[in-house]
Amino acid sequence: RQQGEGSACLASAPRMRPPRAAVAAGRVLTLLLLTASSTQNPTSALRPPLLVLHGSQTGIAEEVAHRVADAAYRRGFSPRCMSMDAYPLSSLPSESTMLCV
Image (cartoon, rainbow, N blue to C red; front, top):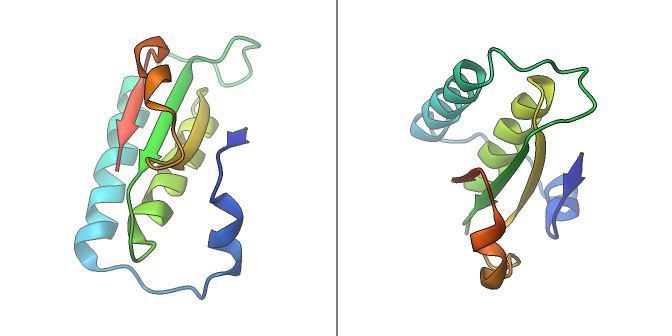
């Protein structure tokens, strides 16, 4: 699994309890990923790519994005999770599957 810049700061930041809306949004996004990938083989050598971008000031969207990326990895995707600020906009046309949190 690959992660973009900013993933190390989540480990050093104090854990805050996300608001119920953020938790619900994370569950919905995870459910969508699980449903969409139900035919994927997680042991397959060819995992479809998934870019998960997050925009966050408090860290809640970042945490939800990492949870979604973890669930996607378990379901057979090859996710990359990074901040929208860190993502080069010129690379956007080459992405096949992207999720913004």
